[in-house]
Image (cartoon, rainbow, N blue to C red; front, side, top):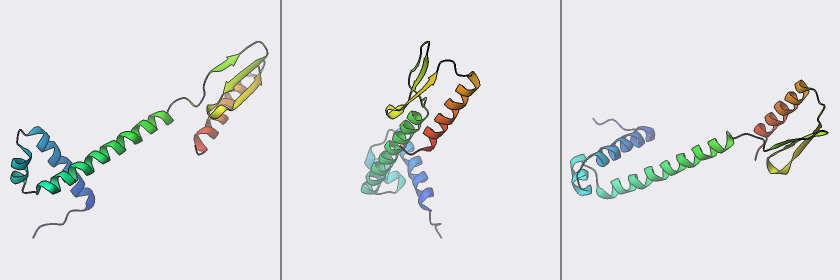
Amino acid sequence: MERQLSGRDEFREWQERLKRFEASELSLDAFCRQEDVGRSTFMDWLKTLKKESRRQAAMERETRSEERAAFVPVTVNANMIEILLPGGGRVRLSAGIDRAVLLDVIRIVSTVLVESPS
């Protein structure tokens, strides 16, 4: 009796099948005969896997953009430190601020930026 595959197992099986097809030098029809799968089923899975690949690539791009620094340029002059935030926000502090306080402000603002929804 043939074991039923879960959706995840079937997805992995088709990923492997597509890799075998790409590595083979067979035509699509010959490969489908060898694997005992229908051409239309193969094409449906090919589309599904390509969509998933694009979705994963988009998620990776989004993750990389979220990992970028939360701040844009910092301006320091004799009187003031200005930190420009994404979305146009600004943090202005006296240039004479204690270094530890400045680091605390940066840590707090970056935590709030990470936690707040875009």
